[in-house]
Each structure stands twice: as structure tokens, then as C-alpha cells.
Picture (cartoon, helix red, strand yellow):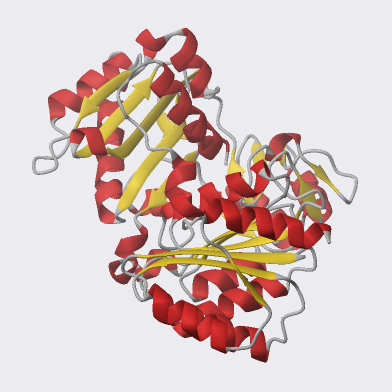
Length: 431
């Protein structure tokens, strides 16, 4: 997960260093995505890399302390690293509710691995990226610990500005890549890949040289770069990031930590990869929303937002705040809306005990406002809505939609525009 954080940092830092659009803004992509991003555990990413011939540490996965102990013995390594597997960064500095500090531990004694695993498995690990109560650890990775004499950063990612994949690297890896880009932009190197020809030998060798690999290690690093690109294509990745791509004292080039992002639209041909999706750490509400093609993000306020379009949803949240209210969520219906989706969206919103009012803000372009209106009236009746409801509709079939709402006899407050809707929603809570 350290690589994941580095990627987000790189997004901001590389832009600040004027390396044009090398990385996409992951936050915006998440909000606009047709479904939540597939997120793999570290050991799953390493398994995919192994299958593509990428050099990684030898490792095993364990679900119990006894399995972890047996794995440590089988490794027969000089030193062993034990890593808790959760979808969050900062594991090394995290704390377990068992009292154990740190989700990453090094030891030369296999017996200690069993003891440590016993204090990890079944306990919650809290890091700077987890909820305050932490995340329960169900799996640990037991791996051979290798010395790293030098660390570099390497990534392959899709770049719209180049209409295809781009390699990005730096001889300063294993650290916050944003700081490198901000303080030493000359240490960030880029190679545009021809999507039809792939990574050429001279490109791979040039990147390996820019990363600081010398002699036989340069050819070895170039080979790893090409294998990583093969993996990038094979799994329909949008990003393969390795931080660090390290050099060992024994003369090996090894991918020590990796983060892979996938094209969600390629799920139909990457069923084996998407079957590895670990849903146990996901927010249950977001998971339920995704089942109905709804994009939901919970917030801390008390006015629920029911909107179509990510930009309109963000504008709605902003104008609620402008009028002194606080949005309870970000809920984007998207384009192809059906009545059942509207009903399920209302179920999500009314199930949140924080919600004291609901603001519906729909701009009907490809969305038919009459469908929204029918869904709203059905949900209000069947769910016996108890909180104030403010509705602003505009666009396709809006007159029919308003007629449906008016004739429903339900206590729905109509709004003329977004500003009026936000003002009325805030006022409804203050009554």
C-alpha cells in the first residue's frame, strides 16, 4: 500500500513539476468511475507479477499463526518479513488492538513469526488510512527479507496527453515521490510507449540507466521493465507502480512493493483478476450502491444529496455548504436511470440515521425526469418517508415529472433552481 500512497503523491507532485499530465487525478477518476476501483492485496499483486516472470521476493500467505510459522520454516531464509494484509497504507506504523505495534515486522527467528502472527490475525490494525477502529487482519504474508542496497521508483501508466502508456521513473525510490518531483524534478524521467510496438530495447535500457543501474544490472533492470509492461497489457492495467524497484547487494533487481490499478471496463475479459477483489474491507453502503450502478460516498452532514452527474453532485454539496448546511453524502445516479435505481437510492439515504432532509437535484438530459418522479413517489410511499424532501427537476419531460409529483399528494417541496433547493433544504432542518 506504500506504493499506492506514492502514486497519489506522484500525481500531485509530477504536475507541480510541469511533467504534463503524466498521471491522472485518482480522486476524480474514482468519483466518475462506473464502479469502485478494484483493489488487490499486496500478495495478490505479487502473485500476478510472479506469473509474468517479474522478480519478487519468495513468499507464502497464511490465515493462522501455525500456518505462518510453517511458512517461515519452509522459506528457510536468513531473515523473514511478516506483513499484515489490509487495503490501507501506513501498515508499518500502525497499531493492533492486541497491543502489537506495527503491521510489518522483520525477524531471523521463524518461531517469532508464529508469535507475531498470533497478535495480528483476528485483530484490528489501525493506520493513518483506516477507520478509527481499524481493519481486521485476516491474512498475513510471510516473505523472504532481502537487503536493498539501492531503491528506485518505476511506474507504467495510461496518459491521455500521450494517447497511451507512459513509463515514469526516478533513481530516488522508496520515498514520497511527490517530494522528489517537487524538490528535484530533474530526477523524474519519462518514456512514451508506442502502443503498437511496445517497449523497445533502447527505451528499456535508457530508463534502466536513468534509474541508476549499471553494468549487468542495467540489462537485468531493462528485462524487468519489459516484463512489467507485459503484465500491464496482460491484465488490462491502467497503472503498474513499483516502489521500490530495488537493487540487492548480491546483484539482483527485485520488485519489492507494487500497486496495480485495473481498467474496470475490462472486467468481462479479466474475470480471474476481478474474482480476487476483496470486498470485506469495503463500506457496506458503497457496496450496495455499486450493485445498482449508483456512486455513493458517505459524508458527515445531515442533508442527503440525490443527484445525476458527478459535477452536479459536487456543485450541490458546495451550495448546501454555502447556505450553512452540511451534505450527508455524495450520490450520483448517472445517466441510464431506472425507477428501481431511484427506489434503491432512497433506501440508502433513509437508512442513514444522520439524514434529516433529502435534496433531489436532477438535470434531465439523457435522464427522463418523469422516471425520476415516478421513482420518488414510489419510494416515498413504500418507505414511508419521515424527513423533509426538496426536489428540483429540470430538462427532459420536466412538466410531466412535476405533474406526477404534484398529483401524488405527498409532502414534497418543489424548488425553482439549485440555489432555491439548497436554501429550502437547509431551512427544513432548522424548523
